[in-house]
Image 1 (cartoon, rainbow, N blue to C red):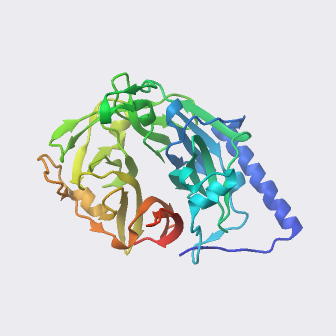
Image 2: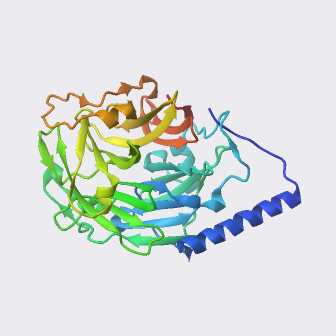
Image 3: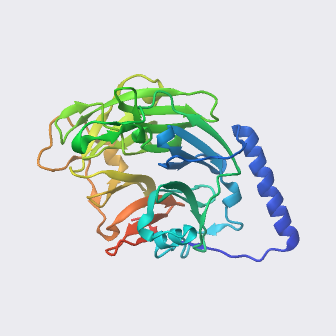
Length: 376
């Protein structure tokens, strides 16, 4: 477990610390092209951290990514990962109390932790309002004002039209899938989602700072549970990962294929067919993925809506051949995995340091518990 170390600061030391934080924030703003601005969110989707405390916040309805400097929200003293940290027993009620709403009106969309400072942020919906929140190491939950932030924004070109299409249970607004996940790797912000008039699955690689639109690769996979090639289903969760010393992207889809892509091929902006290395079971959707090291091995941890938390040794990812035959009846195939039974009900997961994670866990009475765990 982890805890926050409280220290006594002299007035002079605190003044120096504040000057250092402000100075560092100003340099980051200049370096990354961030400027003082106000942001109004029409929606909120996945979050991801980049360098120097820059938090990428997605607004799928506006098909826009905001890069926000979060260093003013960093803890004043270092985080020591040896005791309790980030423990909130009823997160929805804590958020609801900030805006005088019912806990049932609160939805947590995503959770992200700054890998440099350990700062924790939440993408949330307060009824019909999209917002950003932060949780302090002491457990205080706060809304983040976006009226005066240091930020830059990038609008995604060729996003799906903002309208409902389809009929019956298949009716949906594909614009809301313009962003389905984010990650920063190799100097680029990677964005999965749908693009185009007849929406297709896409991975965008946007250079940061936001000086150009970047590339967009249309992607295709063999969906083993469906027994066919598909290019219309968006990635639901992904993570950049080194395989045999080369940058790759591991992507999970609804119903639940796990697919490997070469990052170099995605950045070229051409149509790419991924290598399906696992079928993790149907009637399921991946939520989050993290990579960590334990006992000399590198592991992938995948949270799912219906099939719990799965642990995969990445050495198996490197050696697994491509699945080319259908997997019927809700079965699994490909890369072996271990089910982590102690992590039932996990709806969000983020890595904290080398050995810990922070989870959002839904209880039987529908509370959301935010807690810190030892990675399994």
